[in-house]
Length: 520
Image 1 (cartoon, helix red, strand yellow):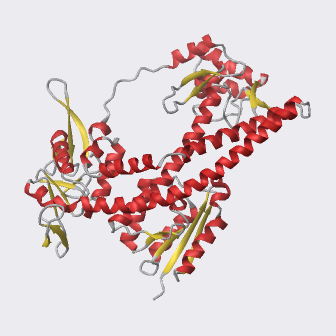
Image 2 (cartoon, one colour):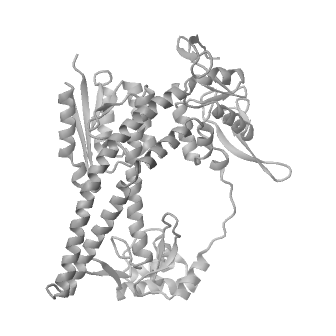
């Protein structure tokens, strides 16, 4: 019987021609033709980011999947990055689609049909998603690095629109100059605020002066914007510090006045207690009644806070010491690890994939080195023309700036592609070894990552009853020590009547026995 598929294409403005819809169509059509798969429908999102699933056609695709359950076999994309660049959300969504509707995702460019129930396939799918996630993070880092350098070194204002009180002028690189009419309004706002005029009254008066901005906090935004004192706020980048840095434009408000306003606007904040860090299981762990447990601190007689998880339905259900629950969880995680034989299979397949990637990198490196030589020739030619007075200073400056940008990009690309094979294999080995120590992995994650890890391992079904963790599901690759966990009353697998689960009789390579279990 001929298999059927739906196809999804996505193009972001940032992808340029590399991710064009036409290119994706060629790749997906080739795969479906080669594999005799019938395309039943195609969905396209043009100009949308892959950071979220808030895209019009992918929403239609999800609705289509619900209606076509049992009819469609595959969801075909050119690369997994077309589907999503957010690793956690992408893996969860693909897993849900396969589990609920039996539809497997296909990466046409790699010729891979990914199966979430197969450990090796699931791992390779996660790696492809992770590579897209990594590319996304690198792009963001490059952009943020450029912004950081422009603000801190060149002291340029970076923004699509000039702040009120200024206008942008200049050539390719624009700069701020004062708009005298609007600047008078800004000065009026600062002067009257320091005279203790109520903000609402200041707002009404500047409206009468021709101020056209609207909003409940528009005056506060002007009062707190450092741009007016010829400073700008810079976000930290990597190890580089953030904070206020000088900006290369004229100030409307002198620095003393601006500091006086900031001092006056400060509101003392009472110290609070961060619950998320102390209660990572809040809204992850369920009560046996089905509700998610909440968490809160309780103040002891000596003034110290003690944290508890509890069920809001009834106090008799669950009211657990967070310390006790966390100690139990750490013991569970100590026994969760990927068996060696699975790690060996993953390692073998990963090395094959790395070998292919390294060959591709060699070709890409050769292309970049050729571009580097051409770029250097262009720079030398431009300098010779400038020395010979063949080009004006403006022309030289414009072209030299562009060529320098190309030089920096090519150099960074070559450095990236020059990453040695030994380093890549070392990274692979280190990441694989982390799978054998889930406790270490959990403890080195932030709270959000810890919650995501638990939700993936237990499929959002971990619950607590009779001072013991219970679940109807655990990822198969972590199931080899379930008998030990049960004997220690740390984790019990509960299943609905009639369902069965294959449990090992002991150890990662022990004999397997079919065990019938029932819910309490």
